Image (cartoon, rainbow, N blue to C red):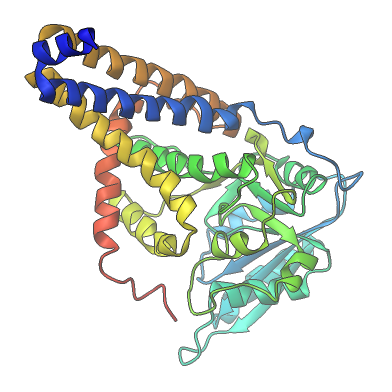
Length: 384
C-alpha cells in the first residue's frame, strides 16, 4: 500500500491510470496474437478424426454472371487439377449471350469432366448467386461440393487434392483465399486486409467455433445442404459463406485446409476504392453475426486503437521512465505481431508480408473506420 501511495504521489492519479490502462490493453493485444491467433500456427488438420478413408469424388460449382472471356484462359487451371478421385467442374452461366455460352460448352471437347448449365437472364426476375449455386448443386453428380468463383484461381495443381483431403475429416471444408500480389502499396494493403479479416474466421474455425469461410474456397456435402433446406437469408444477395455456414457448422464437422497448396488466388478488379466497396458489400451481413463473434473481432481492433492512443499519450505527457515503458510496450507488441503474422502467412502461402507490415498495422484501423462509415447507409445491392 505504501508503494502504491508513492506511485500515486509521484505520477498522479491521471498518470497512474493512463499507464495501467495502457498495460491492460497491451495484455489484451498480446493475448490475441500469442493465444487466439497462435492456434492457427499450431493447427494440424491431421489431428482431427477421419470420417472417410480416401478422398471422395468432388463437384466444383462456379457461378458465372458476366461474359468474361478471360475466364476461359483461367478455366483450365480448375479442370487440370491433379486429383486421385474423379471430379467435375459445373459452370452455371446466368446470361443471354449465346456466343459466350457456346464458348463455354466448347471447352467440353477438351475436358469431359466439364458440365455447363445456362440460366436465361431476365431483368424482371434477377437471379442471385444463391439461386445459381442451388441449380449447380442440384445438377452436380457428386455428394461433396466445392464452391468457388470466376474471380479466383487455384494457387497450385494440388488445390483440389488438399480440399478433398479436408473432406476426409469433416463434412464442411474451409480454405484460404489470397489477393493476387502486384506492385504498389495499395495492393499490399488489400492483401493484408484480406489476411487480417481471414485471421478472425480462421482462428474461430481451428478452435471449433466456425462462423465464416471464404466465398471463393469452401465446400460442404449435399446431405448437409439439403438437410438445411438450402441457403439461408434468401432476401440477401450475400451470406452463403458466412450466414449459411453459421447454420450448418458444428464443433466436429468442419475441416480447415490450412496449407499453401489449398489456397485460392483472387484477382483484384480495382484499387482501394474497389476494395472498400467489397468490404462494405459483404460486410453488410456482419450485424447478423452472433454477438460473441462480433465481440471477439471488436475487442481486437478496439484494443489496438486504444493502445496506440494511450501509448502516444504516455510518450507526450508522462515522465521519461514511463515514456520508455510506453516505447517498450509498443516494440514488444510489434515483435510479437510480426512473428505471429510470419508464421500464419507461411501456413497459407502469403509471401513477403513482414517487412512492410508496420504500414498496414497503422492503416488498418483507418480502413475499418471507413468501412464502418459506409455501412451507415444501407447497401441496396445486398437486399432483394
